[in-house]
Image 1 (spheres, rainbow, N blue to C red):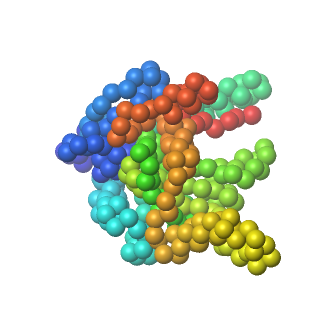
Image 2: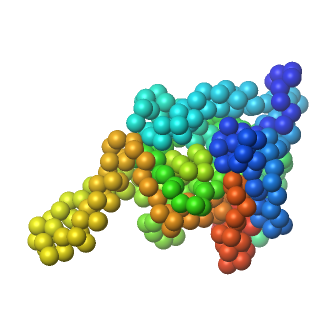
Image 3: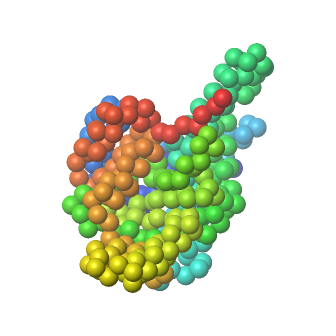
Length: 323
């Protein structure tokens, strides 16, 4: 049931996370609206939130998941702040890593985009069935239906959090003048392996890479173990080439150094420095996955404008295909 006095405005991206991307004492955020191309500055208290977002009606009774979300944020915030302060994953305990895995899993399912995706999928399935001459009565979700299902999936996120925990974790550090973006849908996915019509995005899909920026300078990445194996194999291959091609020693040593840095980041939790292209890649994922709003500590949204010009479909969040 809905407890008395619970917050009316409910965030689907925690304020403690949004503040890490703001500027000044009040953590002011520059916001890009993908639907209107408007840029404005605002307070983290006023974005990625809706009135009664976690409240829903089921069989005539009103329920809310707001207290559960608040409890998870309260437990997670000190862990994230310590990572930002230490710029390292080295001090994470196993329990804290499991907590962060749950936080990422819940964050993935708790957003407006996730809820809209459920509604859109039900609508598309109904249209597809009608086009095939089948009965689609009752298939399309109401707002309450989508809210109840998305909240239930967020509450059940502990079931797939182990897929995140089992990944190889890296802390990416951004030393460039361009800050990391965040958005109204900050958990993003990338996979460089192509599986054709079967798709390549999913928590347990080989090659998957998961990203959650923690602040304008640090991003948590959770990668398929094959990526870690590739880095270790890269060291072995470069060392072999150094023995067989000593005349290319200087060139090969630069490759060996980068491979060792990556492995050290996996093993020791030290941050892995990113160049400008890496930062732009992480930011491009925020643009792709955001439902509507992209947030930054500066008003430089040239990447967003370029991506929207070249790919207008990115003005809305990602959607699943039917048929």
